[in-house]
Length: 336
Image (tube, rainbow, N blue to C red):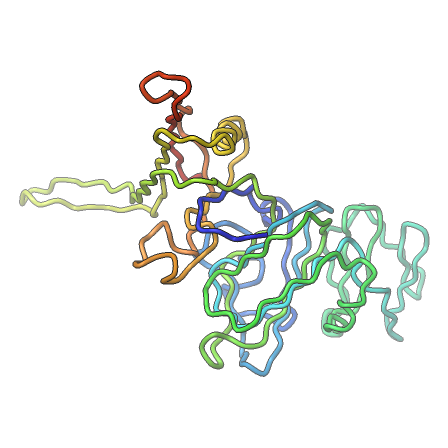
């Protein structure tokens, strides 16, 4: 699937913390930068490794609230040089046994050696014997999983019965990585990385997205992106002003003039009818001097915005002749 420099629209991430997704860094993370921070569309925080270097494998496990389909994956704003990703559907590994805490499957329940039951409806996430690296998880499909986190090595994941897709990236020199693929079922995503683009830097990821594409324009609309701070100016006694600024907010106007293509007219109609917020990626997922002479806010590869139409869709034919090309315009605003 070709990745182009044309404006792309995607559904919001299916791995949002607010919707019940969770992320775990197996080696831990820097204070204030835990793995759950990547499960949103705000790149203000994100995950940061702790005491890492280019010899240490970092693993982040993302568990979705339920099994879902997806055909696009983005690691947004990172410094990783190599990335390996496993997309798994439900149980990724077999049941691991331990002499101290032996859990056995018992129908829809798991039992400890002493016979204590763990009812599957009561756990979204439960840490058991964390020092030994064990986790008990409910994947919202009627079973609880008990597994040894230490078993998350490449060989186990490559051979997992529930492996849907393995994605890789090597010698990465851009700050956002994007994979397009045929739709797969996903409930757990495992991300591993060793090296950073700057030698021995602490590894970071600002945002993780797994989703479906809505569509990509075939043509090139006129695009005007705007960024505002909601500034309030108060005139002071000395005739000068005090200005208070809020967070930066994105908006954009897109338009076609005398355009001859049907697919882009259909995509505009889809966006008009789409009730949920969606993602816009003005650069389409590409970066570098082959596509852009300058780095301009809004068109950078890291710039992916959650948005919605703030007004309707205007349409007309050029000079009102129906055999001519069509004209159309939309305006988008960033949402929360």
